[in-house]
Image (cartoon, rainbow, N blue to C red; front, side, top):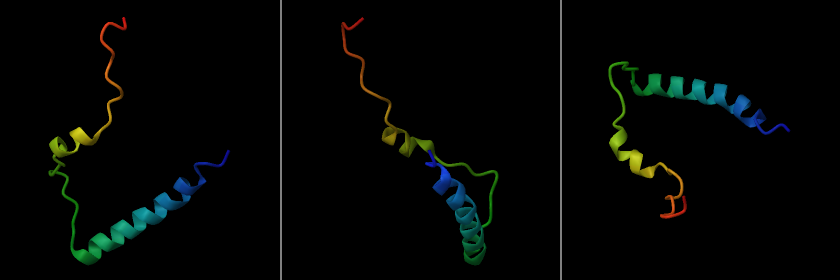
Length: 55
């Protein structure tokens, strides 16, 4: 029943830690830069392959 409690508690803490750590390391946000998804797409599970002739 209370499965989302940890996420609600951890998310603000992680946000603050990342913000403060980024500032200490000199990392600034760059809205013009995006991630390259080509390396990540093979890692995403798309589900089982449909069986041939199972229609």
